[in-house]
Length: 200
Ligand code: GDP
Image (tube, rainbow, N blue to C red):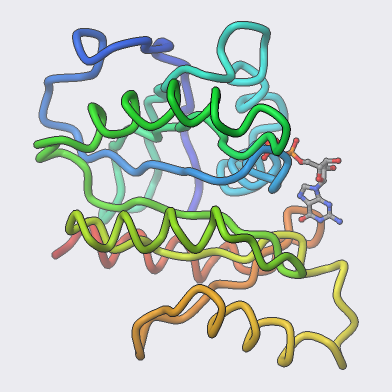
């Protein structure tokens, strides 16, 4: 799968700025520092793209990117970089700003085909658990990706991923995709999972 073009569209602070066209959308969400920018750049093989989302003032907005690829199954789509959550010290304040915008984005969005939740391989986070449970409860059962797997020794991997799976209380059959933005591991699996969601 080759990305042909990847262009920043805009940052959205409210629903009036969301897209109303007919392109499929794929959204990415995760705690701050989970490796979301790195994963998006690795997935798209564009070094600085997700940097846009990290410029001051944009980290709390919904950032949209228009993507074209050489794969007929995903030729033209919108990648949606949702704001990160979980700065421990300002957690409550973040939540009051973060949750409404995310809810507005998800609400009645017929174009949204997949929500990808990023969790860090070695971290069991209550916020991750809650986010996944909440998405499932509103009918947006996510694709779960464990980031930074290159930090795990081979001998630690199976146990770490199993603990994560149990902690997050994922449904049977819903796997976790192990990803490393450093080695590129997981890239093909994630594209395959996304294509599956676009098709159905
Ligand atoms: P974001 O805040 O979720 O966008 O996170 P970043 O993509 O900025 O990554 C946060 C930190 O984790 C940075 O220091 C990255 O270099 C590091 N990081 C991100 N992905 C990986 C990965 O796959 N492997 C390793 N070893 N480090 C990673």
